[in-house]
Amino acid sequence: MSHAAPVSRSFSASGPLRGRVRVPGDKSISHRSLMFSALAVGESRISGLLEGEDVLATAAAMRAMGADVARGDDGIWTVHGVGVGGLLQPRTALDMGNSGTSTRLLMGLVASHPITVTFTGDASLSARPMNRVIDPLSRTGAAFTASPGGRLPLMVRGLCPAVPIEYRLPVASAQVKSAILLAGLNTPGITRVIEPVPTRDHSERMLVGFGAKLDVETESDGTRIISLHGEAEFRPQVIDVPGDPSSAGFLIVAALIVPGSDVVVENVGLNPTRAGLIEILRAMGGDITLLDERIVGGEPVADVAVRHSSLTGIEVPPEIAPSMIDEFPILFIAAACAQGQTVTRGLDELRVKESDRISVMAEGLAAIGVIATETPDGLIIQGSGGDPLPGGGTIASRLDHRIAMSFVIAGLVSKSALTIDDIAPIATSFPDFFSLVEILQNRVVQTP
Ligand SMILES: O=C(O)C1=C[C@@H](OP(=O)(O)O)[C@@H](O)[C@H](O)C1
Ligand SMILES: C=C(OP(=O)(O)O)C(=O)O
Image 1 (cartoon, helix red, strand yellow):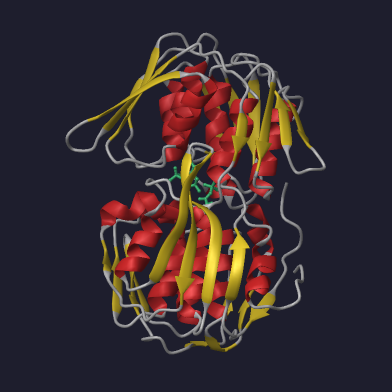
Image 2 (image 1 turned 60 degrees about the vertical axis):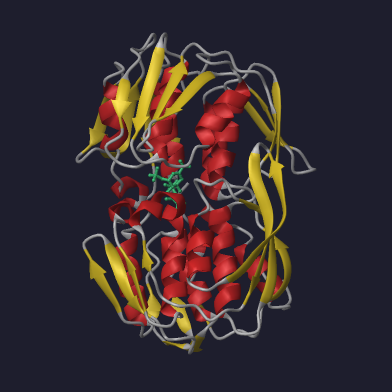
């Protein structure tokens, strides 16, 4: 599932953004909906599934391991699962494309099944660290043969029955936490993950929804102890996937920085473990109101009303990072438009995403005339005080959807057009991105 040829495109200053748009389904919840439904015996139905390339890679992998996964003409996905412990040996290597979540969570699932699976991916995914899951999963008895540095391509030989482990996370990572819990599903006894810094909790919520017995204790310092009872039996579910707050973030920041904008982004998931961006943008002076707060698919959701605002730079507290980890690239664009300086730190994890998001954003901001200083674990950005950004440069998106989308939004407030060398990666998480931006610009909808 490697990308098509690079698609370069230029972006220039936009008129006000106005209107209402609905963001597509949450990527994290979409991956988990497919994986968990594939472990239930019977038919699960999923509406609002994100149909981005990353999630389609998960769908293909679950099919290759025996589940029946199909999309109806009404957009509802049905999955007939094989049962916990029932995953089959795939005939070929599983191509995970650009998706870290698919790879790491599936490595966990495979680890406790009696199958051997090779995972491959694109150049970005093949540069990302997998030892963070190989190390704990090896303790369950699974065997790994990885490329140098614990990279893809790699092979997992699962062990059944596997050994239940207790593991304290050395990095704040929902992917590592989830990989261990998923290995625990087909393992006798209790698998325990100790999470000193809370990360997104979609796995915990959904595992309980599918019928797993899982207990979470929170200690006085915020450490979470998650205990999963193994040999679970999953019941099929009807799932309504809420909208993706990480995708919404691009449209929310666009409305804040493009003068005259007044936008409602509908159906935004606001799980507290994902809602850091809105908190920080409000602290910067963003006019953001939550409308019609409700529960969708067991998750808090609201429509988010946003008006153009004068933003002020702030120091972003590092503790908030896990709840907005994928939103830092677009926060940096908001900071570039704010009055004064924005300081971020504690963002080491950004260096191991689809690209090194600290240095790639620093390089891109420099290319469009924004002063940004790279530190070992963050960026310090001097804002324009609401003036247009100079623009004019060319941005290397480096197979990273969030870098590409962040600079599309920067282009909307740039004096001279900026060029992005490759916008194709946007399809990994937000295939409708351009249509939604164009709807808000009241332009004719065009696909790139
Ligand atoms: O569990 C998940 O669905 C995800 C966890 C995060 O990764 P890490 O766990 O590596 O921080 C996030 O960046 C990724 O987009 C999705
Ligand atoms: C980091 C991301 O995804 P993944 O790790 O699944 O590739 C992301 O979507 O920003």
